[in-house]
Length: 196
Length: 369
Image (cartoon, rainbow over all chains, first blue to last red; front, side, top):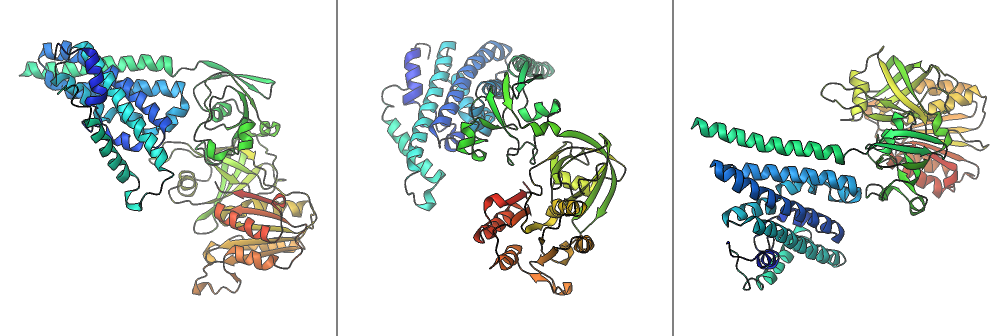
């Protein structure tokens, strides 16, 4: 992976290997906070921020603390700790500077902690042996990819509000179908770059 | 092996300690709003510590805005005008504010946080609201789920209020409930008695404050409350007074009736009291006493579901039906309506009154929020 250009990786993380539409990680908040574009944008930005920070911090901790000490098996608990702390910080920050967003995000803000996309990115970084720059770029790209997916979903959902949907499909039913179609559309990009 | 265990524990501990320290430092900078200046009604300047809600900040400064829900953002009694420093309108406020109020910068004091200097306008009469300490003189059972709570005032020793107004009682921690909550109860004693007040408290299942009053509060203990508040009181007029109440909605009516005796007010009063069965009725002796002292007073209790053993021969049915039957064909042009009870009962009663041409500006009500 050493020779993969950060720009290619960034592009790949957003489009060809979208964390949500290709790996289906981070689904629960994706399904629950995608009713309004405004809140979806807020959550998407929050996730992007947390992903970028945690990818960087976790890279440093993993390759400079855990690997030298030979305790790589601690990565899950350490990664989660770093993610939780970052989310806490973000929560304080949003509460201070945008109370409207804070109330709109509600429980989903602290729940970013257990958003599997975030732990997923940190674990991919380990499996794929990314360098520091690659990890940060991969984190930011995955975050933007997730943001793109939830924004598209929220835009579609806002339009669906005015449409007649058969009762059994209302809510998560139609949302999952749309997600599936969106995921298929994104498969179209996958031939360009392979980052598996 | 032991080396590995120690290393693992040390590494996890060290990393988490570093994270915790960073968070503590961040919190010190992010959650500290420093000193803010509140300008009240363009004249009074208060230096307060930022970070909590406007309602809580004002109550620390001994300015008490009315709040029946205790700051949960449901009763909308704590509305006040905030000219500057309130920040954007919050989603929790929008359903409780009319578009006119939003234009006039009216906000809910329990939702807005003090984060910077603020200028606010609150009605002058709210400065009369004080915090009282009182001792419990008597707790008496009125029905299976309603108790009378008599408080004699300690500090300040006297209260002046309008009959029909309410106070907010502060509960104390009990059993496994650690929080203190404030809940609104109407005063049922008349306003010429200044050194004590009576409250009528109905037990709400799982209710923090009512459970405290019913199960844990004992005579002789000291409690605190804030008041008086509310705009439910007897208005001037000459026409008939129609009172409608249910449960502990009895309280403000009793206070108003006592005041009418005291001031020799001879207006016609018809009081409809709704209950489910015979065991939900109370204060019947008091009502008889009122009937003897007020020449034009009529008390009409109605049971919605009387039991066979109640051997009830009074009115039967929903209180709104009885009310509609009474108003039918009457000249209601100078009648006034006074309602106290559950929001559902009040809404339905207002509906009936409006159908019989008692307009909204002659209907006064006090819902349990």
